[in-house]
Length: 356
Image (tube, rainbow, N blue to C red; front, side):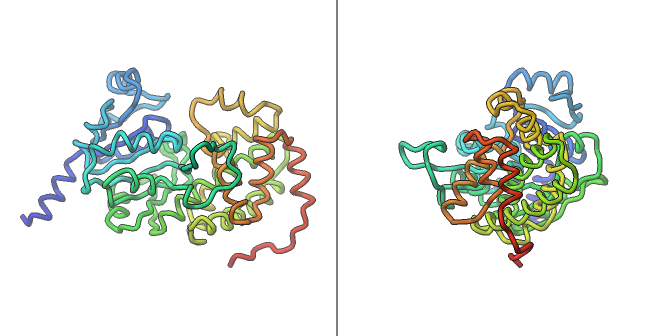
């Protein structure tokens, strides 16, 4: 057997690592476990014990091929292929802890839909007025900055964890600059209920997956006000245009926003009460405060922080992002949802599509 084939076969025999035992991380671990053994990292030792002894986590049954661990070094030494599924606010910190154990041969395919920001000394996200692309990083860029890993990919698409756990038909996109990463991702994830597409614009796919969360919050707010499908159709279509403008300014290609990770994910999250971001908007429209909503949520709604970042990027690049701007005012400046909607309906627009 040639050396390359032997190495490949050995890699096939190793378990796959998943970092993050939240809803999405647990579901991805179960999907991977259909064909491979999986090591699932959880920070909470109690959660690790429950997963291993009772085979349940977050209300999800855990596949028999999944074993939970509480040691990042074990994940790195045992697994050549790792799927980090950690919220963006904790992602860089996680990478700093994981990085000493990583080697150039590792492959990382993340599933995080958020931005990481680097601020000047003395500034906070609340005080800084504008952000540029050098200060705003996708998770693949964080991986590259914090580790020696070269082969990096991302997972994005209309992937509501509850539906995936029920094995309802769904699809995702594996994006990477490396065809090897894409093919490995497809081989590991694809099954009879889960289709996997490919894209080589990893930054565009990441940005699309992040920005759609803004529109999902706005869609939840419309539903909370009791408005119907005409209003939602208007929001989704204008939201898609806004995503393209912001996405291009941040370095993404238009095509990424028109595929499964863009329009596909946008439509899903704008129509589902299972979406955390949709739920934030819905509860805001019902009169709850943002503080109370976030305190009550078990997992992070990435869109709230994304609104802050996208608004300040739009200001820097002079992008007209009306939905993002109004939502920022609702979330952080006391504007009511009704006032925001009235402004958007009165704003004079003419062109429908002008980015193609």
